[in-house]
Length: 234
Image (tube, rainbow, N blue to C red; front, top):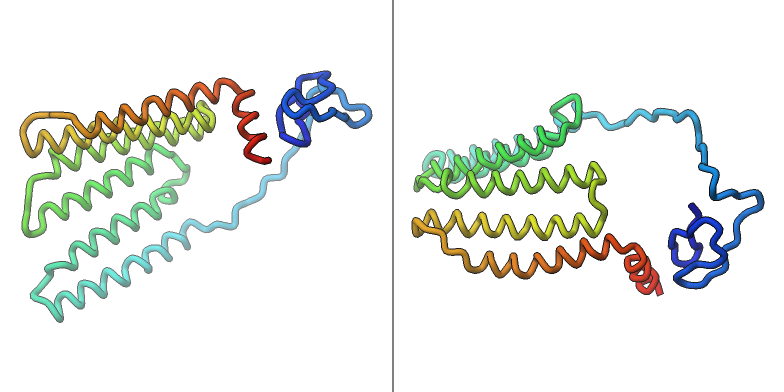
């Protein structure tokens, strides 16, 4: 399909002018919008120059050096391992986040997102068992982390599969923020008070839900979106 050279609106077959900016449509000689463009019948495969092994090795060295330095300083100038385990656990988590997409032969999105979530839970568990130890991992960290992981996985899969368009993805992200806030407040209330009394998370949901609905409706009406693009370019 042809597009307007001024505002970029997709034109209908046989259109004489752009329906938005009224620019005259001038097609090249012999152009037939009804005939699909066959395009190239063969594509050359370009091999990526990115080396996963080198990336993993570089990240490992970058994470190992400050971890080792923190342990040595903590032992030499402190009273044993007091604060360095926090640094080591944090760097280990960052290492997993940096290399998890490249640990497997195929880039399986659910697998590396789950790996990142497990690494985050591991970091939170280490923080909870270090002095002063506490028992907030299961009632707080687990439900919030699992909810965040599930929401991120859904958004990423929808984006990769092109199931939703740009404004629809924005709407899905707003709904995800609302759900995450509700889970956070519910988990905190249950941990601190033993009961759930939702307050501020409902305000977030009430604010985000109408915005999500508006974004989804705008995406369904292409003319409105194209009009917004045209006026933003002026």
